[in-house]
Image (tube, rainbow, N blue to C red; front, top):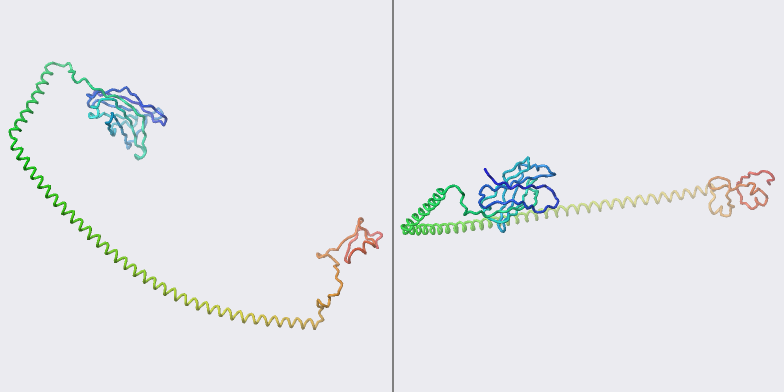
Length: 331
């Protein structure tokens, strides 16, 4: 094959890239021979393409465009090939394109930079320099084909009545089938509507019965629960009253016993005091009260060289136990 290969190189990168002006130019007569060969790289190495990845290409020429799947893929070398369809190749002018790869279960897409190429109009009136006989023979073949077509048209016109009759018969048959189909469709729709109504009424009746039955059961359960609660309430109140009464009686009995014990103890204490000549607070009211030692049992004070034990110092001190370091000249 003598295909025209327009080669384009793309690098997978997030950095800004301008549209590639490829200078690729095809003719609208390059039927089946106009190929785009695209090399894909990442970090300057061929991009490894999975066998399950979809590779899409979009080509746009003015208001016309095509989105297609690229089938020819070299998975290990990161190269794809796309033959431009003849229908799209017949549109002359500048073409913009872009490549997309669906990865990770076709949820993520890598989009490559845009590129452009041109489709030119060929000089179809130029005859290849092969041979005049071929040119004449081509014209004769063309004329023969035209004459055959004219003959078929004339024969068809001669049998025009038969065609008209056949067309009328076909028309009537078609209309009859349409009418029959319409009646059958209307009948089916009416039957379906009636069935839906009946089903809806039956379901509505079932739902009403279920609702009424459920309401009765809930009411019954509620009444039984109220009776149980009332019985439990009455029983609990009776138990509480009996318990309260027993506690009250126990407290009254216990309190009376304690009061009697206290009175007896008081009487016994008074008798013991009177019998044993116990000194009461009233008896000791006029007694002299002096501390001989501190509360912890230590001496009240002490004398030393700075505060010697002299007559004056002793007379100024309260009664109690004292300690003196200096024994000379002591009173």
